[in-house]
Length: 125
Image 1 (tube, rainbow, N blue to C red):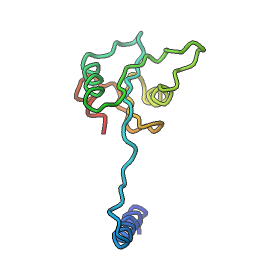
Image 2 (cartoon, rainbow, N blue to C red; image 1 turned 90 degrees about the horizontal axis):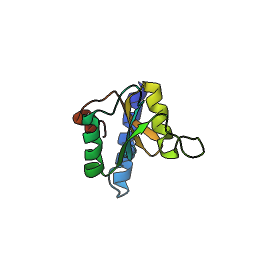
Image 3 (spheres, helix red, strand yellow; image 1 turned 60 degrees about the vertical axis):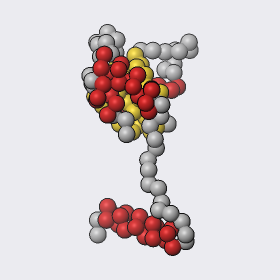
Image 4 (cartoon, rainbow, N blue to C red; image 1 turned 135 degrees about the vertical axis):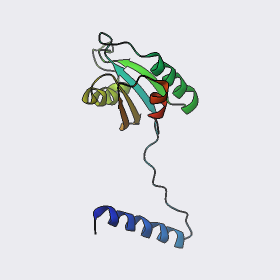
């Protein structure tokens, strides 16, 4: 039996056990998106208008922190601001520019070089 099949049967068994004890179905949901960061290099490209519109829409509709971050930005002590470290690492690995969707410290999605509002908004689960 494949590992994927074993996991499926285990989840079914857990659901049946939980129902038998009077509980509901277990929730199997990953972390929720808390931020979307478009990471770019200002000397190579500007932030596309569609991406800016998408970030604005995410802030308003999804109520997450959606922003653009220039990769060379540092705080007063020369460090990358803490809230952008995970996104910068993921975007750098994917290649700039990239939109990184995070849930806390977990990377949920990376979209390489989005240009439209739809690509930006669609990246957030």
